[in-house]
Image (cartoon, rainbow, N blue to C red):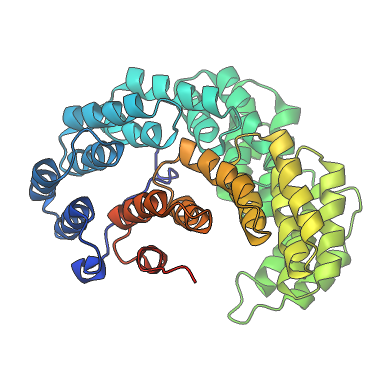
Length: 396
C-alpha cells in the first residue's frame, strides 16, 4: 500500500532567526531540530528534542516518531507515535504518522489496526478508505477493496485513482457492467488513459460506452485548458456545451469549475447545483459550489453548504474550520472556539487551527491560552508570521 497520498505535518524549511522573538525553550529546540532535519542530521535532531524538550508532551512524541522514521529506526518511530496516540486517543494525526514506519517495516498488523481506528473515528476518511482499497485489492480481497473504494467515489465521484481501482476490482470480480461504468468515468477524467483502455479490453470492449461526442468534448476541453500554455476557459465551456447532457453529473461538475475559473460565477453556481442534485451524496460538488458562492458574497448560503457537508461527513475538519472562520468573523468567539477545537481534536498539529485557536483565545481575553497555541504553532512552523504577531499582540 502506498502512503504517498497521506498528508502528515513535517516542517523542513524554516530558519532559526524566525523564532528570535520567543524565549520558549521548546520552540527553540523544535526550530533547531528542524534545521538539523533539513541537513539530514536526524540523530542530532532527535538528541536536541530529547535533551531540550518535555519528552512526555504530544508534540515531542509525534515529532520524534517522524524523526526516527526518517532515520530508518522504525521500531522507535512506532514507539513514539504510539506514545502520541496514547496521549490523544481520539486524534487521527498520529495514526497517519504510525503508518509510515509500519509500512516501511512491513508491519501489516499495526498498519491495519490504526487504519481501522481512523475509520472508527471518521468513517468517510477519503485517504484511508482509498489506501485500504489499494491494500485489499493487492491482497486479492476484491470485495473488501470495493467496499472501501465505494466510500470514496460515492462522495467524490470524479476521483481518478479510486474510480480506476474500483473498475479493476470489478474486473477481478467478473462484474463487467460495473467495471465498464467506472472505466467510463476514468476516460472522462483522462480520455487517453492506458490502464482504462487495457481494462476495457480485458472485459471484451474496444472502447467505453461514453457517447463519442461527450468523450471528444472532454478531451478537447482539456487541450484548451490543462494542456494549453494560455488556458481558454470560455472556449472549453463552449466545447462542453456542444455536448451538454443535463443528466450527466460529470459534465455539470466540470462546467462548474470551468465557469468559476472563467469568472462566470452565477453560471458556476448553476452547474455545481445541478451536479449536486444529480448525486446528492457528492461532497466534491458541494466543495466546488462553495467557491463561487464565496466570491458572490453569500455568507448565509456558504455556511449552509458546509453544514450540509457535515450532515454527510460529521468529522469533516475542513467544513468545521470554515464554519469556525465565519463564526470568528461574526465575533461569535465561543462558537468559533468549538469548531477549531474539533479540528485540533483530530489533528493536534494543524497549523491553521492552531493559529485560529490562538487568535480566538486572544479575542476572549485568555492571553495564556493564546500563548500556548501560538507557541505550539511556532514549534511546527518557526517562521509563522501570525504566531509571532499573536505573541506580540497588545489589546487596544
